Length: 406
Ligand SMILES: Cc1ncc(COP(=O)(O)O)c(C=O)c1O
Image (tube, rainbow, N blue to C red; front, side, top):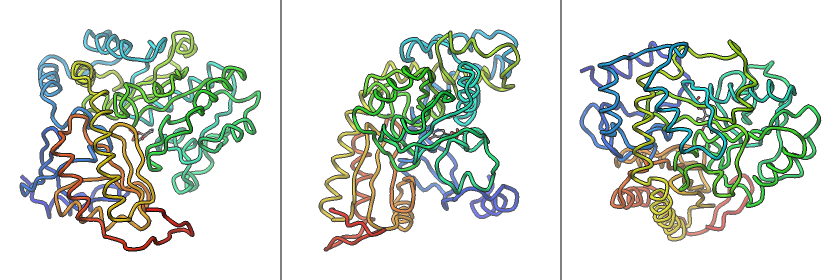
């Protein structure tokens, strides 16, 4: 096997330098643990960026992939496939009511591209409302509805007709909603911007506004879906069903798969040849995705995420109050954020040294997206590492002019 130093050198020489890399050369994984090429163990509260939802190398997924690899690896969606049809049936079985039609792709961004095209085609309207703090991916359509200017501005001109309203503030949506609004797209809980939960009535108000205006409501459940927040879909926390929903990340146990779901009526607005993907609905990914759905359902991973997520959150709150370092601890289920009053880069590197992988979510937010199968003892271990990596602050300090309350 290639050693760590050579691996880093080769990736630096030959890979686009677009990722903020962590100094870890990963070799293998099992459940919530991964090991680097030198055999050092890490507890993985990053889970990729949430995609190792059912754990690394989940045995059900591995076995389904091995069986399928022996049978058939590729098959274009222009041919029928039993393994694809079985996955579609399982997916529609867990989907919100009515959203039983899907287009299959390979990533979250692609799932959102399809949602944008679907909304335009179905409504005949060209405008989309997205939100401050949103993240929907980095392809041209998806980045056009993503909030951070640093991702958008270097690539202008973008897809036109996008308006941004304030996440959680319905009046700001009303002020940009109009006759040309085809869709409103929202993450029910915002992920990349640091785990932001909307006010309780927000999604319902969006639903009502879209209905009154003849616009479609799109939920991007790419990070929140499949049990992550303690419900199968985050929209269930507020009993709101969208017209279109996008899913990806953990859908195929870590293999690249995205899905755009809608009702038959909405999906049928896309006509023959108007959208396609060579690899979408690939047999290997479909086999992995069926196994993933079975595993999530049979092991009740959504309610497990709710229960142990609460335990994790309480532990984080305890650290926050003992150390006086947090501005806020937020989250639902196993989608958690620890917002500090200082930069967290060094904390994240210290966690790494102590064998814990966590996510960076802006300069002062640590995000935790562990696999839903993480054990209680492993959460205790993560809390121990975080506690010893964070400084003790005697008195509140400020960042960006705000005073943290600890
Ligand atoms: C909410 C959300 N939408 C879309 C995406 C883009 O997914 P992908 O990186 O698979 O294109 C992400 C990725 O983090 C996401 O969190």
